[in-house]
Image (tube, rainbow, N blue to C red):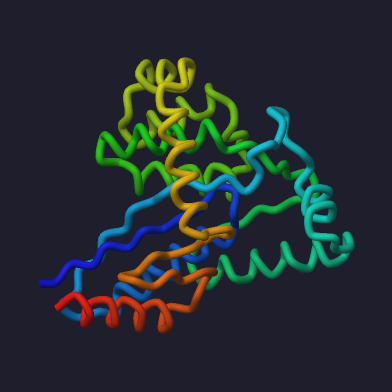
Length: 213
């Protein structure tokens, strides 16, 4: 069976990233004789976000220049889309946009343990479904422990930021390759931006498989 590696550049506070990943999984289920390996790469939507975060509604209005009504409409749209992919979005008015640098360091550590996908999915759920502060070290220790990582190791890794430079370097590499928005899937020689529908993603994977033969 042929294996295609997909590089997914994403952030754990990006709703369209979890939508895109779930749609990718739907696409993969339609493939015959093609095995897909997904590798996650870090991207920070808001690298200068303060430690305490910012009200999500205020942040979106400020960043994208939309009205409160449009913000509410967009959040409801995500809730509806979430139902179609089996993911629960709880996007209340008091939700907080958070800094994700620590979260990306935890995912980097989890990747060394072979648990990157599990860690990424747990953080998506912790943030979007459960409203947790994924910039809080104690919360990150809990979430990492829940997928099998050692709690003491997590605390040490996040406290001394031993993977901080590695995360920054990876972010820089992908930005230098022209990626400015997420999710972006690199499938073969193609960069596919946005949460594309499963059929579109499946077509790109099949094209990559043909080119690789």
